Length: 302
Image 1 (tube, rainbow, N blue to C red):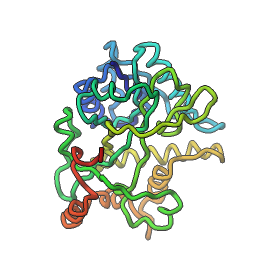
Image 2: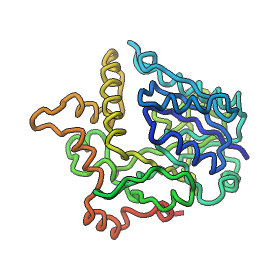
Image 3: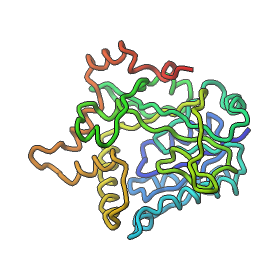
């Protein structure tokens, strides 16, 4: 039983090789990768995989993805879907980003068989969390190593309005949307963020949560990576301003505002936003005791 990853990548030079190595070791048979105008060396890393039949790679310039009509990123999703079907004809497609690592509860082939005949599932995501003051390890390249990382097992639910009124909880502790795994023939496009797929009528395909799969999300890692993401968010916001109806994810909009504010008095800095995602030792111990933070191996209730 084969599975192909549809992968969107933007400025992930520290992560992309390890993401690929991990998923190849896991049993993913192919990758369709959309490189969204990376400027940090990611594009050059991806060149290593061109010519390998397991990879289909296309680079997009950011200003070609956002015009006066708004975002054209749905076109990227449609290309990834078509490329996966044409080049691989897989049994399953999973939609991920470079900082997301698929975690099956068992051998991947067996887990896919257990999904049965249902054509589409959501996959819950959990944020990796690191203690302040410790060296941040690179993402793992084996499932056994991934199982030892700590994640936020019981995240706090929030939204743009609530978080705008009270942002005292670091984003790392908040809930992030699921990703999706599905049979290739049912989908015509991706929902925003890759959280679901649309059917032939453009409707969101209803899907229940897969109980034997998870996604481990390396949201906050190095300061340099976060700074690049902040600058990318600000650049994207500027391009989106061409269309008054265009929207940006609220977390990304937050980082764009911080970048735009610079070092203005009374405004949070990008470094402050980064540092608060890493709990102090006593806080981390409290989170562990409460069960809010657990190892990947223990983070999902089956």
